Length: 210
Image 1 (cartoon, rainbow, N blue to C red):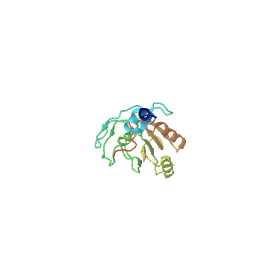
Image 2: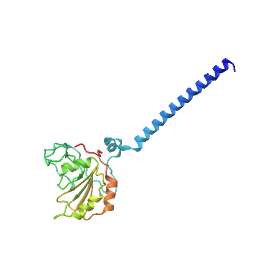
Image 3: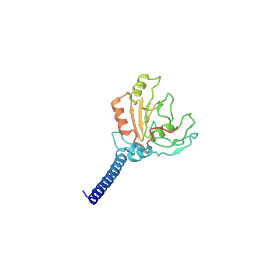
Image 4: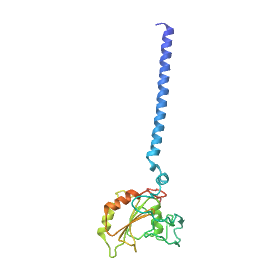
């Protein structure tokens, strides 16, 4: 093989390597774009605010939607002069901040409470996509409380379990603009409520900031 032929072979190999490199780079770029777009479409929970904005309030489901009383923030040391139409409230003005007049933040940390949390706190948790699980038992009802607690996942993000007074039933399950009254624990019905209404609120915040 002459020197010219050798040079031509080398040039052909070089061009082939360059074409393969361009093809790999183009394939990688296309693959990255597809993965990124799929993540945006299939994973609406990439950020708290995005989730709430994409999913929004569930206007359907098996529970009639409650009247929208708004979502105005009021200082944590100020009384709420308005009246709520649902007990416990499922929307309306609520406190916002690390401290409130009852000694807890608004929204409250997710979890179980032995103290009664006022509507001004609870509504903020519902606004963040939470589920409220409340009981009203004169003299106590440890079996009911334990059964309700057993329904809450080990990771209690977006769940509040607490007592409440003067409810029209022993048990109330709440979400943003939805409520379910029960006089005994119906696990299947409660889980259906959770499936349909958890994380269906104006905002979604799995971990509250306070």
